[in-house]
Length: 153
Image (cartoon, rainbow, N blue to C red; front, side, top):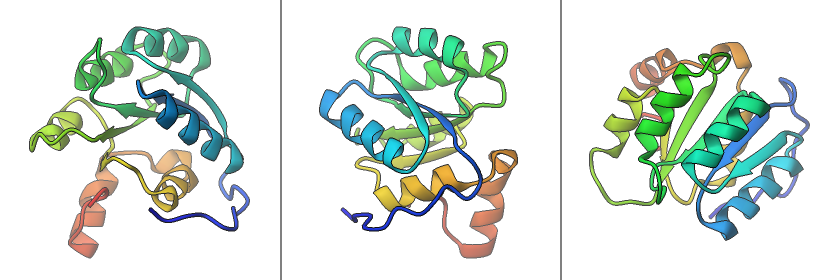
């Protein structure tokens, strides 16, 4: 796993990030890293808590573990997208599960990107540095056409 030795200032402003992850070590590590990058962050350790926190916190970005014990991640992503005020929230799916169709399910549920766990800190920094108005799945098609790669590969 790569390390970040010099955290750069947040070029496009501070983000409000919600991390949804049931592994306590992972959620605490990720939230600490996101804070060190200069962003605001909240977390939830299950799907029901995530809905409650998202409704109150109104995150710009949700980093969503697809393998939650109480909620299928793609269903949670869909539900978040239908919440008033969260329609434009960028959802980043992450998973350590081996299923081959997870990325497709995540994208169909409205996730902008998909990454396999553990997510590299440099990738996380790049995700959070993108301008808010560039959040869309259209960027995936552009990236794929220009580089031949999809995000998260």
